Length: 76
Image (cartoon, rainbow, N blue to C red; front, side, top):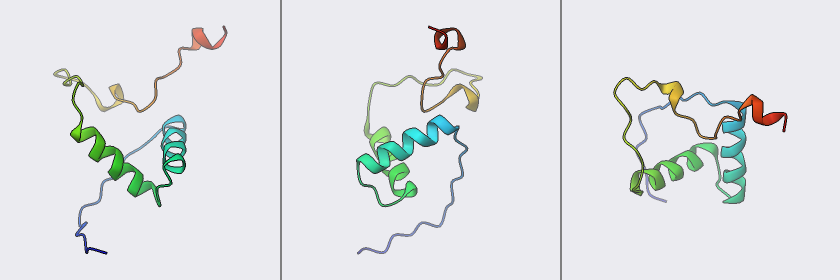
């Protein structure tokens, strides 16, 4: 196995729904760890095209992994 230098730590906060989506994807793809799953998703995302560029003044809270369910929709 190749020695990889991973000297930088990245910490992110996820909602319960986001963590559940990550874990479901991870287990479906048989990824060995959360870190491996996040690295694979980053690799795929960075290689992809067709996403919007963030607006000036956008905040971190404006970007999520899963869509927030509207409380009005929950009662339907």
